[in-house]
Length: 58
Image (cartoon, rainbow, N blue to C red):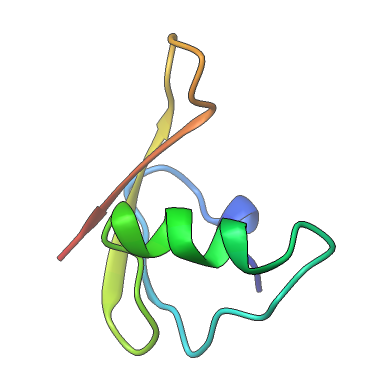
């Protein structure tokens, strides 16, 4: 399962962050948002602003 497959209100543990076609930059941005390997995150749903998703570390 990926973060984009979570439904609003669901919590998941991110087992690892794989380097994607976007390179290490994406992993760095996720870490800056608090999305870190082996830590739970909660998906709040799509945002109205430019950022498409709202997550929070739990």
